[in-house]
Length: 115
Image 1: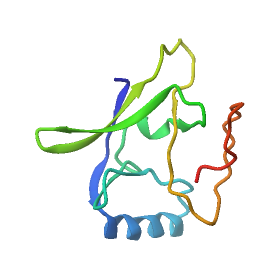
Image 2: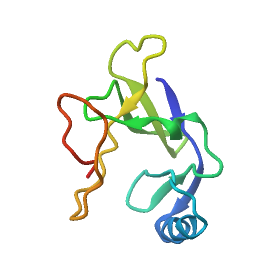
Image 3: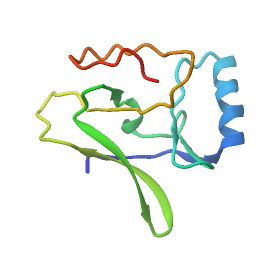
């Protein structure tokens, strides 16, 4: 285990409203992480360092949803040994959409987009 992705647990309808509000406020990035069909963790304003972990098409970590005391949590686990000063990354696994988000991870196996 590397770190838990923490933030405020919200429903999809709230996440949609917040995403729009964050854009209107000029917040460049929001940190919304889907747990399941109904639940999202919003780390935009009350998260921890996990929200700053970047995407990579060749990541050294992965995100896993676990249940602790009947609450779903997102935990980042390492795939391999991570050296000092090595960037921690995981695959965001965004859903496939028509409008592509360019990937700039630089991996030899880069897919070219996050979705």
